Length: 573
Ligand code: DGT
Ligand code: CA
Ligand code: ZN
Image 1 (cartoon, helix red, strand yellow):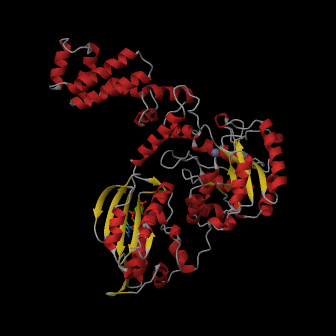
Image 2 (tube, protein in one colour):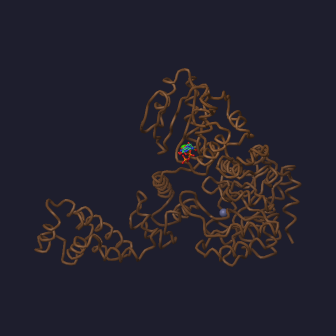
Image 3 (cartoon, protein in one colour):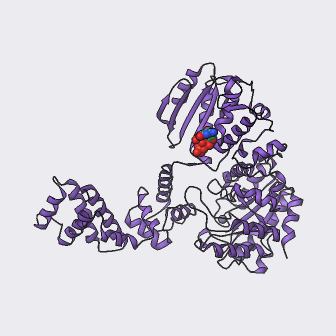
């Protein structure tokens, strides 16, 4: 048995699907109308059906009554199920985006084959909605905002979003002058690619002042707790944040505990136990007495371990390694010497080549590897061979002018469905280096996709593979691919695998970095910048590279001009 509200909702969905299917608009309107009447009806469903059968409810004819009766009796509607099965499931999700009705969804599907939220987001980011009748910059911006809003309800946030929010909170807390120690903990401190919430720890002589400032921050939408040792809020972005104020003597142990991860903590506690001690968020205890621990390094030292950088605390092999010796110095942003994978207005970037070169140089870097899209990427204004020639002439001129700063002639070449690169050999030979990326036909089987990418790696012109899995964090899973097989192929052929630093990608995932470096596969950290500020995304890449235990040696764009030029030259025929 279905309730009136359930039936009305089903009728509304039928109305939308009929419109999507391009049926007679009167039919669609009849269902929407029936839903409205049912919602406003003063009486039960049975009564409504009875009156409708008697012809007393305007616009609700026999066919409609039968469909409603079917739903009423069976709790579901065969008609609705049949309509639904005629569309890709992702298409219906599009209707959840504020401002997108059946008409717009239909246009997106028919003109651009957009059939999921992920497709839609990608299309917006590639400005593909701008030329579509009935759409434009404003609609596109609204759709992106709508998608962000939907994602908010998924309960996790991009690192970049949470980090910006946390920095604003920390700055606000610092300005009170009421905090002595102040640190972000949790997944944010470990630089996970997505995080659930912001965990902040502090010590203070005037905790009340600090707590009041915290809950009073202008970004706070809701206060869910307000005490003297712990307060909790939900921010305008939807992210929750906690502030804990601790006693100074407990701060170090608490910072270890709340930084986590849970698995790391469990292993640390097990280790403490083997030493007849207890580790908790309150301290490290030998019998009843807490050890005096000034900072985190002291906690690890007391356990017989070298300091474990927060990024590595994921419960993998870090404790074993910390027992055996010091960690190598992990990569830092200041180790970077150049930017590879940067787009200009030769394809879908915002700025002219010269501006991107100047922006790169202004960041203290010595070289830029410009990589516009190749010819198949028509939506991104991919370069025809003539454009390539024109760009190379401009690069030659700029290189003379800007020396010793160096622009390398790169390209982001589409990997076609058979694994071929998107230019003939004569054109490929004119580049200093080639990033080979998949931008189409994501739905191959794992075996086919792996074969496709391995074929691209076998091509001697390929320097590296771009954004290996194509994932968009919180919105699109990567395509099916055998990552170890790809890493092994890269090792065999001397190719690199990019770590795309865009905060939505962070692909190659850090969980594969150890395997890649063990095989000797270099991992350049690439901004994939389409505008000037995009260059700074490398910081996100460095964060996850640290999780992957990468050092500057593993990352080609930490090498000097000479060494990277030699690396590029090595693979070309
Ligand atoms: P997330 O989901 O992005 O917020 O990830 P975390 O790691 O920030 O997790 P959260 O905020 O639930 O907890 C913060 C830290 O507290 C976590 O990294 C480790 C510690 N913790 C939480 N639950 C447990 C637990 O059940 N056992 C232990 N040993 N530690 C825990
Ligand atoms: Ca957390
Ligand atoms: Zn790309």
